[in-house]
Length: 116
Image 1 (cartoon, rainbow, N blue to C red):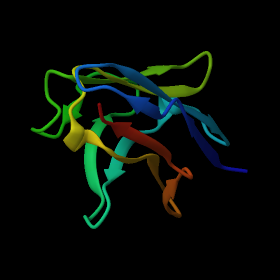
Image 2: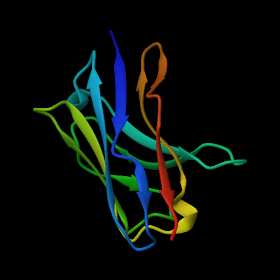
Image 3: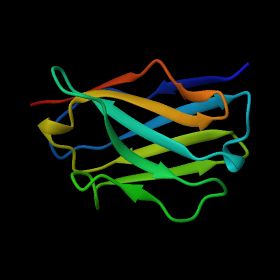
């Protein structure tokens, strides 16, 4: 059964850091593209970062370039999003997702709140 479970969200002050984790079951992350999305209150869901199957070139939204890093740990079948220099506008629910032959699969999301 395919399942994506995010964790690591929380409340952090501006300038702080968080690392989000997405534990994947049902397929190997090493053989699937993986992405992080986020959705802020009243806004549409937006792509934040992606990594192709097998790793390699990563892609980021302009708003997070230089601050966020997506990575995978194949042994743990987990995808990470390291978030540094967080800003209040990064506040959102963050979702892990992956394209599969049957359509996109999504985790339940983890809340990130950046506030002093």
